[in-house]
Amino acid sequence: VRNSHDPVWRFLLPSFVFVCLFSLYPILDSFRLSFFRMILTLPWLGQKFVGWENYRDLATDPVALGSLATSMIFVAVTTPIEVLLGLAMALVLNESFRGRGWLRAVVLVPWAVPTVVASQMWRFVFNDRYGLFNYLLFGDATDRYWAPLAEPGLALMSIMVADIWKTSSFAALIILAGLQVIPRELYEAANIDGANAWQKFRHVTLPLVKPALLLALLFRTIDALKVFDLVFVMTQGGPADTTNVLQFYGYKKSFAEGMIGYGSAIAVVVFLISLLLSIVYIRLLGTGLMGKEGRA
Amino acid sequence: MRKVAFAGCAVAIGALSLLPFLWFVLTSWKSATEISAIPPVIMPSFHWDNYRSAIEQYGLLHYIANSAIVASATTLISIVIAALAAFALARFKLPWGRFYLMLLLALSMFPQIAIAGPVWRLLSALGWLNSYHGIVAAYISLSLPFAVWVLTTFFQQLPYDIEEAALIDGCTRWQALRLVVLPLAAPGLFTAAILVFIYAWNEFFFALIILTYPARQTLPVGIALFPGEYTMPWGDIAAASTIATLPLVVLTLMFQRRIVQGLSAGAVKG
Image: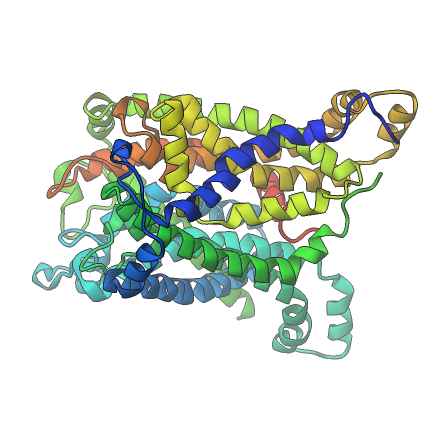
């Protein structure tokens, strides 16, 4: 159907304008800024072109390298745990039992709680003098209480716990959607063949839910790379930079210290890592998603 | 035996999801002595002083108003713009439609820090820092990729016959969208709206860098920057957190099914 009075591009224009102004242009500008030295809040001091200097500094900055390592450890530890917990939750939610509706709603609570609220909540749980964590560990022996958020070895783990609590249910939702499209007949056939519960899980459920697991893993990976709120509220990157993830370091350089050129170089690195991951994601799953568009 | 194990799992999942937050909510009704007591006091004495002080001393109502304005405006505008785009993408074969959807998908994955500096500079040049329209403009573009994806998926599932008849009868595309598609798509629009609202209500990073005047800050910023270095006012923080979370928990419990549908629409379907 052709209709020259209201061309299709008009419908796409508003979204395109917003996306260009606030997403595409800023990304290009981040690339440009990463080759300059300038102070964010003092633009009248001018921008000085410094070539690759910011990147050279970045490669030799021990804090930046530590930050990269911290981000990688954070992603590598939290995402598999979140996907496994998500799978367990999804398997339970996929059964029919009394109170399933309630459980399904309750599981969404961590997802619905604002991340900043979850951060304060876990900060309270990990409090060094009256936190629930210490009480569960040491009971009344307050002299043995730890300060998890001030302890280099424990701070990152505390943030991981908070992240796992907050986001496992999202993984569960994606995996549950994958479980629900597995046809019942397959389980009935397995029953007739005398398969036990483990065999059914291993040979029917697992292969068929694999795309959903992968999807959850990639979503979580990309999201975990962006972790910021938890770090900002719980530790401010400390103690001794042990929780200084990339996104927080970039924020600190660009906005707290105003070093927008250097901050942009960090931003570009984070961007490239994410880009790599999204290409993997789109390659693996995107083509399947795109198959159905355009009916006219 | 198997049944007992299963029930145990179900209860454990429910308890781990709910109890940590419930603990914080209970804290909001505790006195300072109850909060720091060892062993912990489980049931609070239900006094409302924390709420009063959160409202009177920390201006909680201001933050709530700011969040409500920003989240509602974002939702309204973002859904209208996304619906226009999704209609075109779902209904017409566009040579670059596929590419546009891919682009949006890629954009939604980029870390905020990758665009934070330039967005700040842009809003600063426009004089839009510390303004509602500044933060709303940023939120619209950040929520658009997700909203377009969810709505495109929903629109694709709608029957096409009525619309085709309308177009053949000489309806313009605009009329087809307004008179045929939108009424049918109302549930989808509503679902996308809830998800965008939750996103805008919870967003912290951009609110932190764009809104530096307390009078303009949203709830997440207020809660994150709660004053207190050595003795944290935990009761007040818990009270503010409870109020900030209440609308979301209510929305989630009421529209659980839709939210689950919407979240998986952009992901597994198709």
